Length: 435
Image 1 (cartoon, rainbow, N blue to C red):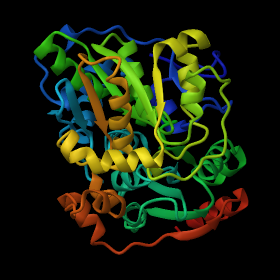
Image 2 (cartoon, rainbow, N blue to C red; image 1 turned 180 degrees about the vertical axis):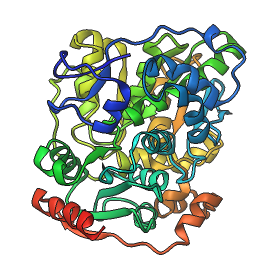
Image 3 (cartoon, helix red, strand yellow; image 1 turned 30 degrees about the vertical axis):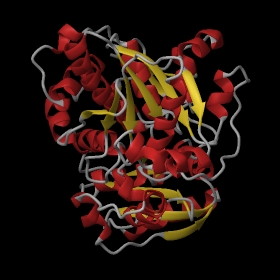
């Protein structure tokens, strides 16, 4: 299979080349030229997320240098569960994606990308620096996945003071080949700097760069696996498609569900739940799409004012009317997030993180129109990552899972940096010279 750019259909490269590049030369995002057509029968006899993922992704890896490694890559990356559990009330489920090493759904894509990159990177070349902007969870997942890998470096940019304390600790607790930068700005500033660096050919001659944000195909494609796995298991049990409410900021997680459905898997409706950053709900309500400055919310990992993956969504649905009719987007403000977390144990029998609470609240609003449909709330992070918010609302402590507790016991350090491109270039070049 070949991959092209959202901005230039003449671009045509294999998947491995797209993974290494991160961003297309014209600044666009890589997308497959075609999507495979799959059915539930294609997954007969497959029981694990790793097995489902390998079957789902095989067409995307066709004729690629990594094709023969795909089964091993999936087994290595998806070595933790993604359970689909029933909640209160009836017809409500939760897809738990926080059982990986950093207690967030980003572990799936980050570990998959790292497994690919370590197989692609030649030892006789300059170290490849994985540059990643994070609004909370991506950076830690990427740092954990790439930590200690030979000839690979990670530089994480995050908005200083706009991630939770435990998120910030995770971002800075990986010594050696990982550098954390706390940027005096917003996530959108961090994302702007990353895109500028990835498009800087002069810099790349000195510091070879790639991306691990959801703009990377190596993050996006594997996230389809847990949607496929949950939807297929639900279909085999009920004969009905499973509907999803996906918390989303940069639109990578939502787009993974959308692409899985486009490949023919038994996924019904897809609702996108955002926080008070309303660019997606406003578009789906009829407004012209326009990125804007992000605002800080309790669901900080979704504080995105210009979702990068909207470009891929527009590629998949080039007609705005068709796109608006295909999905629902719901904005949830901080007051509703607090109320949903506080009522979560009694309403759903579950404690939610602020991002998952956005999805739970959106579903409560959708239920009035769709009372009998099976919906899955996508739980993107463990609530213990946001203990300062959640514990006060539910009235008791939350014990962090074992993997998260281990990370929190490590020392942590992040360098301050201005939200200026010259500052980022200086850090990247200094890191290379130090090696």
